[in-house]
Figure (cartoon, rainbow, N blue to C red):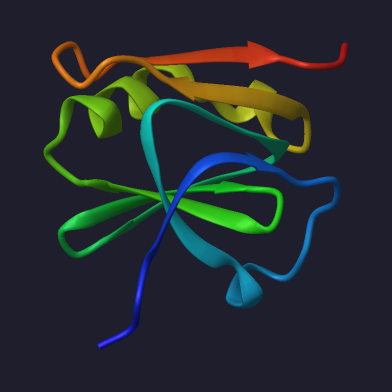
Length: 99
């Protein structure tokens, strides 16, 4: 079984091959910043591809539902920041870092 990383804050600059993405879990009040490359739905998990990272959420989680609702094709290839808020609400705050 592959180990998964839990990171507090992640910053990435460039788009890389999706196969080389590292999987990360955001802890509450942590943020990932990078180029948004889309969502990937696999089995029991939703992967949000941002820069060099695949941010992982359980498919049925509030965070996964929030990501599906907020992230759209207009954000593809744009630099965004995704902040995971407190675990009780499970919401994600997403902002565009560049126009």
